[in-house]
Length: 255
Image 1 (cartoon, rainbow, N blue to C red):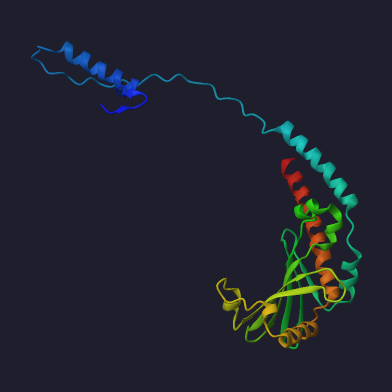
Image 2: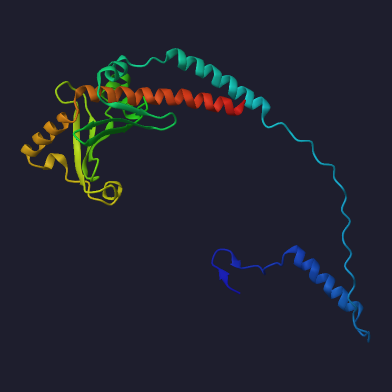
């Protein structure tokens, strides 16, 4: 036997109880038949008797808990609807803009679309949570207005499918309300949607004259500070509307 320097020899391994009992029965049967000339005969297996058990009555699925959830949701819905007010910048922008607003209930993606000279201009972004852990840690609500919204602006030829995508984000200020991160060029839809296609160089690394030319190009297709204001406002507004919708859907389910 192998021994341990701390615990001494290992004890012999015990067989499981069900194996020991079965082994004991085999030995007992063998002992009773020692010396007999006639072989053991197989006995017919007898099916165990099964006692009928009355089925349990079905139990209501969390009725009390579901009712509590529904009431709490109803209170939250009332509070959120009373507090909700769409920003004036949203309605004002849509009244005078040439962009078409694309917004689908339940979808976190939002877009603006327009056509310019046979090309489709599309600006896409997502809803933004009004709560920012980093901002709260640094001083609370005073940093809320400084939150940037990521967006991408694509210009695509309707016939060939070729185009460019500008990956951007909004920023505070009055002179220039957005920053460009990368500029991706694609020759067809497959290259545009491919996750492994080249996203282009860092915008700040390209020649300054090219940077200025791209800024002028974006202005021609409709990108300006008012669009940035709209993007920031809708990102928060969309989150609020989707939250209220979530409350209502959840309440309808648990009721």
